[in-house]
Length: 349
Image (cartoon, rainbow, N blue to C red; front, side, top):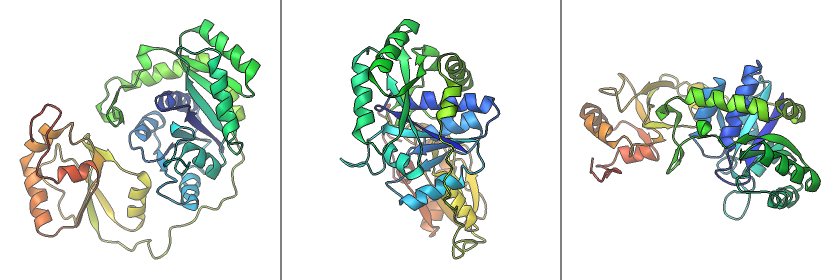
C-alpha cells in the first residue's frame, strides 16, 4: 500500500481541493483510496467520502496517543491501494508552540512522505525561500515535493518551476490554475459542508480534469511510499467487544448535525450498541425503543429556524431528558439542548 500526506504551507492553501482532485484521479484509475484527515475536522472528511465512496477517518494526535493513531491508520488502510492523508492548517502548526497534533506529527507517526501545497498567487522567487524554510525546518519530515495552487497560467507556472528547480531540492509535481469553477465556499468553521452544496459533483470532476492535465499524477504515485509498516493492527479488547449488547442509541445525523469521528461510531457498534440515526430537522420524534441519545456537532445556528419549528421533536427530547434518558451532547448538539439561540438573522429561536 502506498501512502502520502497533502500538507499546506498555511490554512487556505488549497489542501482540500488538491486532495479531492488527487483522490478522484486515483479512484478513476481503479485504485482503492483510504482517505484520512489530520486533527479534529469533521467537514473535510465529507469531501473525501464524496469523492472516494469510502469512509474518511480522523488522525488526531492531540486527542489520542501515537499507538492509537497508528491503529486507526493501519486498520482503515490495510486493504487500500493508497492512503491519502489531508493535513491541517500549515504543516508544522500544532497545539500551542509545539507540534503535537500537527500534520508533521502525523507524518512521523505514520511514516508518510509529504507533498506541500502552496498558494502561488502573486509569488515568484520568494516561493523558493518559503519552500526551503519548510524543507530545512525539521529534517525528520520527508517532504518529497510541492504542488502549486491558484497559478495564473502556464507562463506563471513555468517561472515558478524554474525558481524551484534552480533553488530547491524537491520536485514540483505541477499546479492547479486559478479557476472559479473549483472554488469551495467557506464560512465561520471552515468549508461549507457537502450536505449543503449544490453541483459539487461538477466541481470535483472539473478539479480532476485540471489535475490530470497540470499535475504529474504518475510521478506522485511513484514517489508515494509503499513501505507498509509491520505494525500489527490490534483487535478490540475483549472487555469492550459486546459489552453493550442490547443497547440502542439514537444518533442525530442530518444537515444540522453531522460532526462525528467515524472511529467513535465504529467502536460503539463493536461494543454491541445498535446505532439508530434520526433527523432533528425532519423527523417528528426520536426513534422507538432507544436507551440513549447522542447529539454531535454541526450547525444548529444555521438551521435554527427549522429546528425551532420542529416542536414535536423538541418536546419528545425534553420529556425523555426529564425522564432520565442518558444524553451525550457536544458542540452544536449542546447548543440544541439549550433554551434557545439568536441566529445570524438576529432572531431568537
